[in-house]
Length: 339
Ligand code: FES
Ligand code: FE
Image: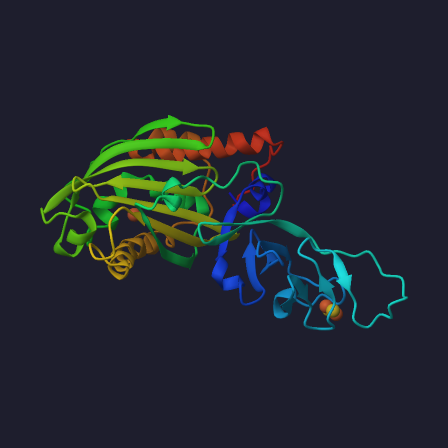
């Protein structure tokens, strides 16, 4: 599915840049094939505009901010956070002022990121209760461009059959290729998927899992949020909660920004931020390698997939079904594929 072609997907929030990255001035971002500029309005809330001055088309992200307004670096035309043109420095004060604006988008700060929706959002940014829970710490784990499709990342996130193969060097056990199934409960936002999986626990993972046993288990209560977000909520027998939030922000067809946050109910002294980033980075790179080798366009040949499917493909099949239902419910009968 070419995400830039499906208008309904423009009605969802996606994380773009860290809030702290836009405090110093405007920054560009590409979302679903559109160039946008992000900056902070006078009250400190994020703003997102089309990255194109309506005078002679310079990129506004090359300009600067002046009391929460964005100034084009070419001739100084100045826009409010809602996109309205409010100053043309070359004009005399008595000159009639033209009513021009650039396109503006929905922008909000959540969990340390600027989230943007290109059109009226169909759902709020999903809740992460641990973000305000003093018993948990938040770690910005990754932010990377991957050459894959957002749906590929999502289906991989719920595919327990790849562990034994893709993650042999970390926690997967190649002698256990038959994974446990998820119990899946569909919800209005996507689904909830629960399971318990056995994993290897090499010494490098001991502080992460909170045990020195050679094997351990993960009790997982995971969630998929339409269209491209996932919460992987793991509890180890040690009592450690390891909650990974991933969003596959669609940049272009075949390109995503992988945004990954981690919440842990332990302290820095138990397992350092550095270690947690390094351990999960190794795992995530294993996924990146294989996902970038897949076709970025997700074939929605559901019938063939149902005939040949393994139980571990079921979450991905439900995602495809739900995405199609979503598009159809919003009047998009046509789904565009790369081939
Ligand atoms: Fe922006 Fe001229 S192009 S002010
Ligand atoms: Fe994986």
